[in-house]
Image (cartoon, rainbow, N blue to C red; front, side, top):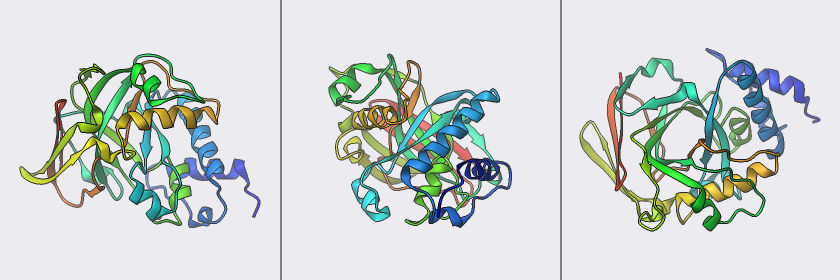
Length: 259
């Protein structure tokens, strides 16, 4: 079926409004390129309405998850300033549909990074700072293999992102692939993981991939933009009130309480 692009934009815009939900019909009609074009068109609409972009997110960075959902590469979405939450705050679960969280580092760009041809070495030089973080996700459609392309059009489940204090990035000292995460829920240890779970390498690999992928759509990473680089762990559900603390050695903690 031929995609009615203008209709799709209006449909996914409506899905982002309070109580909205996108239709399963788009599981059969979207291509990957369509999904990204819709999401970027909606980014431009958000910005035209005064909603400032904070940066980008990269998802499906683990090989096993990509294979599970039938993707050959990661996916990207957008971050907005309205969704930037400072570590230590408290938020209501009732405001988020089918909420969950992922544990990842947030990297901040110090210079413009445009593809194609961006290498990990080039991406490393562009990083200004690192913040301990977690991504807060919500699901407005079908979180299955069939639902992945509409999910990209709907900004890849992005709802908000929690960040702790930024640490200046020193490539001589900081090997992001060896960053250690310890996750606690209500003070109980859940999981120990490393940054090399991201892209089978390091969060730096997410930055290089993202810069090259954005170039396909005439976009680039800009100075000051934040990038959520992909989870060290599985996605966790926020299915009850809880306090979450993600501790990253040597970068500190991201803490969020949900009620």
